[in-house]
Length: 210
Image 1: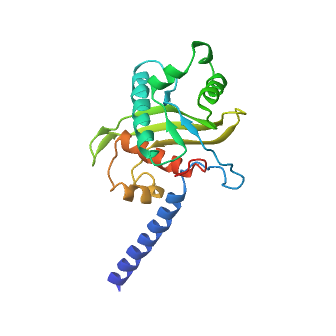
Image 2 (image 1 turned 120 degrees about the vertical axis):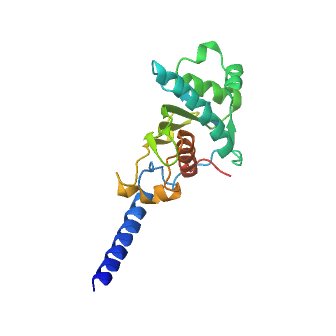
Image 3 (image 1 turned 60 degrees about the vertical axis):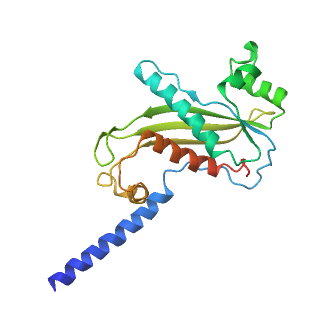
């Protein structure tokens, strides 16, 4: 009878973990605009990621994070037919000194010279590498970024998304079960954190077409 009770407890616990894990899989994503009423864009320009304004050691981390975001965005969007990713050098060649002071000027100039429909801008707010290894981390990876897709003609924000995560252990937050399982119950690097965040957010954008 005691053995049966133990088995029943284990089964109930596993069922609870699966249920909570399913809830975890649905949370943490930024809501994107519904596909209803989304107009087709023939040309979307993605600008190099910008590090948020910071001072001290974190400024260097943010700059490194922006560089990694650029590489990952280029990889994730290579099969999208209406997307063109610009490098920092290409942006410098296209822009004039008089139109780099604010977002509206940048978008208006790119609309004029490239005839694009929209411009995507990404800002990296946090990029902190884990301290430790796969199985034990003194400090987990942590990352935060924001994406905005701006109509090149009206300057209105067509779509936006953000990502903000500091990896948690399963013991500290049981709702992370599905996410922890997908990561092999290991502590991931900040590159993995950023990559997963970008992949999910860009896949949710209704304006990017393959």
